[in-house]
Length: 420
Image (cartoon, rainbow, N blue to C red; front, side):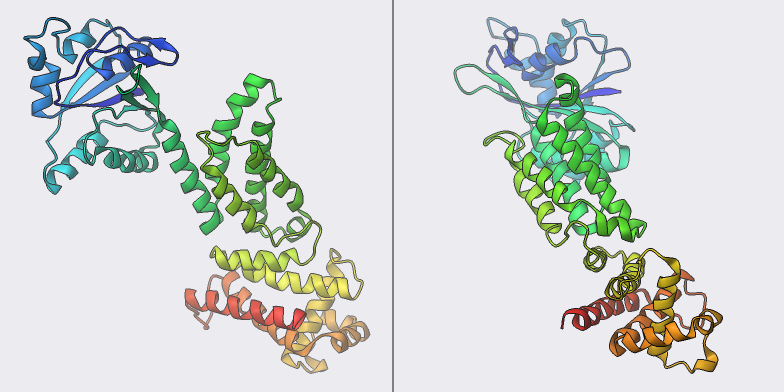
């Protein structure tokens, strides 16, 4: 359902003609009339135009008491909208003046309650005096989360200048959405919101340009690849993390940045995208050490279980490479894991498992090459990883914070062994 929301003020408004999307409105006292005449003329009966009114606004501008002695345009907004013969329902809603904290929260609830699940919202903030612009910003963000609304347009009637204009400032809301989405990615490793926002941006541009819009193509690539990277981390796809095309992704981010024009509505996105690029700066194409770098990412983003798995498997992979074993061969990985566990726990040969006994000579050779400290680290990782994977159903009931602290410690000890 489409909804136009607008606050009506109490002032005496002068007649003017607004420029809106390259066309001129009829002479009017009300920015709402100019906006609604252009935007809502084709709306259906299920759509709604909601005008919020304090008592003073209702008397002076809704009913038109402010203009009863004027020579022209003596009607209030109620009559002016009635003359447009719109199909959409016009709903006046009483609101308090908002002079107290209690009234402000009441106002918040009244506006919020007019919104329904999935609404497409158009907001006119021309007469959003005092705190209302901030309240509107917070309210829209709140409703996006709880009612899944979509903000289609935010409009402002600017009477200053040679020609009064209806200004589209929806880009402010878009920037806030991008800020929140990128913050989720940087702080929590969540990329889905970036994908959704990018799709809204690039899909119309690709459609209009028949796939030739370079900015849109690069933005689509960046958003999809970020999401792919996070899927690899969430599902612990070690080889895919190692082999991922980080340089291509960074180059695509650079291409997006270069195509953002100075002074454009999306220019404030530049520092946000630069932060994303910076976050990926340690990763390199086809590098077996990407797994360890991904462990740091997991620590930073509270992906604790994934972090333990990646740390343990990265150690095995690095040793495979050192011994010139195929790191994807299950037998070789079992061989190294067994050798590390035996050495780390100093397990007597009589107590070796069947696999170790069967490959005794190769195990002994591998043990001799394994670092003592790395073997002990590997054993500790195994203990914590098992505790996590078995959901804590054992006698050793570790607390959540224990896993986070231990992962940091084991990661730092691993780096010290490998690089000193």
